[in-house]
Structure formats: structure tokens, C-alpha cells
Length: 318
Image 1 (cartoon, rainbow, N blue to C red):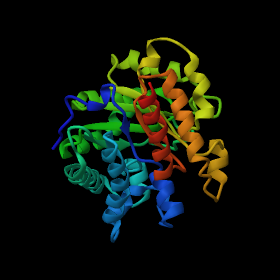
Image 2 (spheres, rainbow, N blue to C red):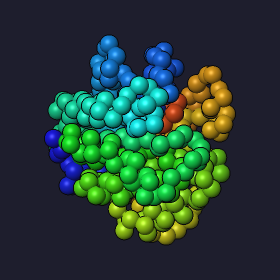
Image 3 (spheres, one colour):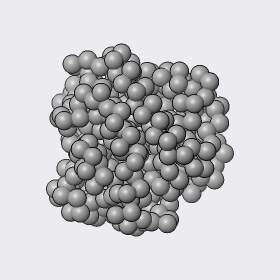
Image 4 (spheres, rainbow, N blue to C red):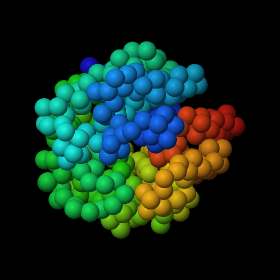
């Protein structure tokens, strides 16, 4: 059952960690085939559940060791209707797998949750389409209807919140925020950004956040950036305004490559973990409201540890 749904602890001033690039870790480091980049299929694979638990545990141990909160994001980024159909999952099977994923996270929380290091369970939502391209876009109403089923599964299973990652245009974010609000569960909205700091659909981050807030009455609990390198979006945060205070989380890529380059690459560009940690520290020094720190494509425990080290060292020095 949910523990923090009505009072998310990451809305305070303390630091929270997330995991890194789950799919790239499994594919490139553990040599596991993930069709359509879908981690949720491991829930049905032999030893897949244990692999997932081991993956999460390494990050949860790190967070607890340093007295930091941790957000457990479920492996369900592809567990929606369209991607599920490609993988042979009908509506009933998707409902079961989404519930099973939250049950697994709840079990992990029992191991790691502590008053000084709370663990939040989060149902992960991905885009209906590709997380790199804004193609076949839905209206906000269509998106609300489309994503409502997955959100309902998470709520029924007791997730504390839901988080939508790699969104490429505002209308899908609006629909998800409305569906979550209707279901009575907090939602975080995270946008994919290109090398120019804009969404794949062309909106600036400010435009996207302001459009979603205006259309939903500020329904999202907070916003995040993911699937882009800090060098791609740091300049976008030089703006001022209330919208910037709504941005609380970063899950950056390890690589400085563009999405097109990453899509066509057969190797993993893990970048420089130490440099990435320093870039997070620099962003945090300018934007103290950013308290949720983790990684996206190409990152692993090394990157999140360097981010943790850089940002907690900054706190000790302040």
C-alpha cells in the first residue's frame, strides 16, 4: 500500500536519488536482450525479478548509506497499450504486470525505507510513441484517456506517485497530469530535451511547463528533465520566473551525443562520471530547488555516486 502518496517527502529541501539508465545497464552491461527497450518483460523472465531487485538495491543501498531519500521508479516505461501489444501483452496482462511491478517496489521499500532516508514508490509512465521524436501526437483528451489505464493499475497497487518520463510534447503531459489528478495520485512530469535545450516538438522548457500548468491548474507535483546531457540544457535554465521553481529533478544522459547519434550507435557512450557529477553540482549551485538527482541513458551506479558525491560535498561546504 502507499505510504507517501499524500505527503511526498521529496517536496522538501533534502536530496533524493533515483537510479540511472536501467535499459542501457541491462543491454550493454548485463547483455540482456530487451525487445523495444522494455525492461518490464524481465518481470516475466526466469530470474528477471531478482535481476531487477539487485539493480534497484545497489542504488537504494547508496542512498541509505548517505542518509538520502530514494525514488523507486518501476520498470514499466514501455508497459502501455501500444508497446505492450508489440510485445504480446493485452490489457489484462499489462494491468497484471504494472501491479506486479509496484508490489516489487513495495517489497524493496520494506528493506530500505528509514526516517532519515525515505523510499518513495513511483509508477513509471512512458510516452505512447518514441521518447526521442514528437510523431503521431495526441490531443490532451486523447492522452488522458490513453494513459488512464496504466495509472489506475499503479494506484490500485499502492504506488505513492506516478512519473511520466521522456515526454516530447506538452499535450501528452497535460493528459497524463489530468488522468493522475482524476485518480488522486501525485504525478511528476519529465521532458526529453534536444541538444538545443528544446523539446523534440520545438517548445522551450519554459513553454512546456507553463502550458501544462495552465491547462491543469498546476496539477503536477513537480517537473524534471531527462534523456539529455547538462551541456544541452544548462543554458535553458538561465531564464527567470515561477516556472523554474517547478523544476525539481534531473536525470541526464551520460553522453553528449544527440538523440539521432545515440539511436544509430551500436556502442555505449558512458561519458565521464566525474565530470557529470561536477555539472550537476554547478546546476545545483544556481538552482537550489533541484533536489531529485539521478541518471538516464548510459548512466549507472558510478555516475549516480559521482553526482551524489559532488552535490553532498557542496552541501557540506555551504
